[in-house]
Image (cartoon, rainbow, N blue to C red; front, side):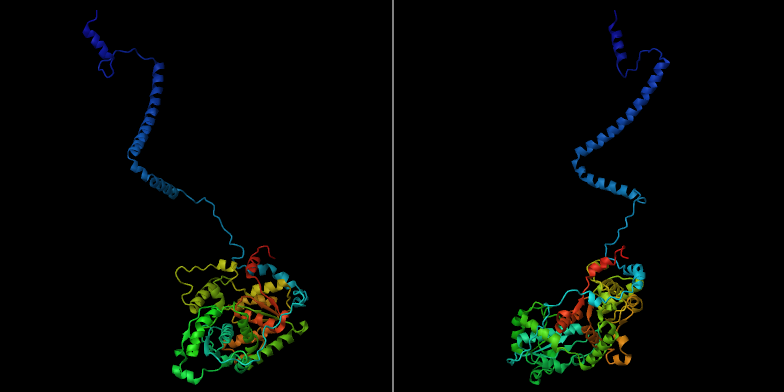
Length: 513
């Protein structure tokens, strides 16, 4: 029998961790190899177990402390930013976007492609006669003015206005002043022309217009005097600046003049309105529009020196175009430096043009274009039709319409920006182009040369009597002229008003030519 001590020792030897082990039989080579394989597998499992345990420890910490989850998005974004910073984009594709059609000035490239074809064109068709195919029979325009013959009622007082701007802005002020005076039954004092730093023209009303003719023509419709009566001036110490001045908003309706201006006029008997350009709405009653029409088309006749010089140039243009029955084309070109600068458009003058435009903007409109937040978008301006047509574009348009190189053109314009460069293509396409400086001698133009308004008045006269009038930019000059031409010639006045937005897209077409 086995004693109790021996039994306890045998049980103790079989327990794990016992210092006493039972002898084991020797291992065979086969068993050694299998044991080595199992040891490597157990090592891999051990490393996996360590990773799993570490993951579970982190997860358990996060689950136990839920506040840490709030930082998870920040940690994720930080890792993404680190990855993007470390990644290389050298091999990524570069996308070159072509500007929107019509947003870039490419007319010189178009002319380069078409130049040979234009120079070889020897057609003799008279575009002046062939372009306008619509018959004017039955659609004649009729003058809107019927001259009054009655006696005017007693005047409600005197109105004195200051006309600002150049020739055509001044003309706007005069026509509006006549309309307001007629509407309020007031007496109009001959307008004063405000001297402007851009036009630098000190001309007075009588230097540009026939003052006596103006007063006499309006005599039965609106009273006009050259000065305010002395008995009224005495109240204001003979100083017009002491007279009550209305600061009227632009495009004010006739109701404003009736409700606000008329009561003060009846009280003071003389009032002043300064400035006055564009201070009357276009949407006015027919009776008020009649005063405007009367002033612009009948009463405003240029002074004798301007009228004589203008008619002389008209006769010269008709003589030069005798082979075409004395018919010529007039073009109002707005490509002066100030116009190019104000448009904020980019042409083909490069760095020199850029510097010139910056200087011109600062000189004419100090600080206007450099205000904080002001963004200049030349491409958008061109797409919206706000860029003035260049001489080259005018030439391409007219040749495309069928006018050939034998056509006589009168160019009405101020000093063209970079004229030697920009005018060259137009002169190549129309070698018979004329200006007042070409038609008249320096001696003939000497009395007008230093006065921009008087020079513009000569241009107006020659354009008024042309067979075809081409306007390129809009503004007061073409608006007055087109109305005046319809008044004189009825439906027979021929006008070209290009859509600059469509032209911009057309001249940017790489397939053109």
